[in-house]
Image (cartoon, rainbow, N blue to C red; front, top):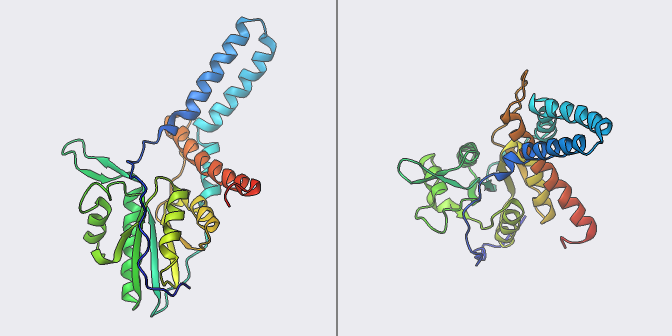
Length: 267
């Protein structure tokens, strides 16, 4: 438990607007490139090898597009999550809310929380109200609201206060990705007293986020705010490829963290 009441240090990192999820098309692009390579193999006279590879290509394409592979990947990411410990009266609770950036309303141009952010904001506000009702002190640290440095009040702050959170109990961390968020929140909590840290993010993101927080010395109790699933379909659809890309992004991030730690690059 941290015991100092000093204010956390402020970051000088330049704020950046969250980038779009360009990885959604990556698996489809890979399949198109592979298909072009197979056509080239047929053209240059490697028909027998190309026929075998084409059959494998088709099987993988169907397994991904019809939901089998993304279902397995999402289940691996979202299952087996431990329940957070019960709240005790008189504790200092910190809720770390990992956001999803903002998007612009196409009609008004106003900034709004992005797709996955709504459930995370709602879950953080619920935990805050429960902590307060149980007689605890509670604060929310928001990371991933790219409006925090360009709008007043920030978009996530408006959403949280609408759900019953006191403005004075909300702080903002910096960073443009999950690892930077974990480091920023770690710095903020270094000189702050707290008894329990609750990490709020989407179910598919929880394991990667918790791994990054562990890497910076924090052991939060994870609280998934939402879950997603693949669609089992007769014919391949783009949604399942998108879910595959999202799941692979999480798994590759976890693998990269472990490799970097083995190589000593995260010290």
